[in-house]
Length: 126
Image (cartoon, rainbow, N blue to C red; front, side, top):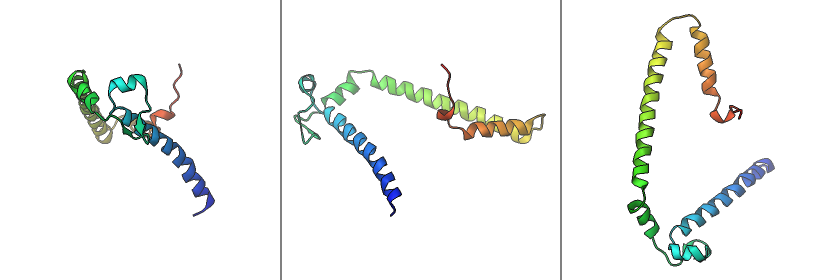
């Protein structure tokens, strides 16, 4: 391997390691009782295994919270939007492919250019 590749791997591995350690820490904190978390967030052995270990937070999330309703709402919205976009895109694609009208090619090229640009690359003025 060359030095440039090693440097690239190192530059990518360091942020990935930091993200992974923080994620493991937060997940391990979620398995601690609320009483312990109210006093400290460092009562883990080696920073990974919580002492004492409990899953009551996840049980309370499902039984006492509105999480099932939030999940149902997300499913309804995402499936509805997916179906709507699929229907509009299918009919528009069929019309662009089969029908001839003025500026047909220009409209297809503009649509393809819009698909080539990711949403994050489009500047938004506030």
